[in-house]
Image (cartoon, rainbow, N blue to C red; front, side, top):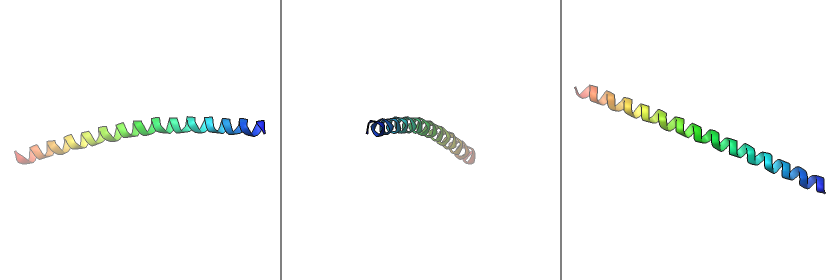
Length: 53
């Protein structure tokens, strides 16, 4: 029974590590997407200015 509890604890711990790592990756992806959208927005605004001139 102790072995089962130990294995469950190990599995829980590695699951937590995977989830934490996944969250870090998602935060990086969000930052990249936000940065990309800012570039696109700036680019669109630049085109609008050019088309008005």
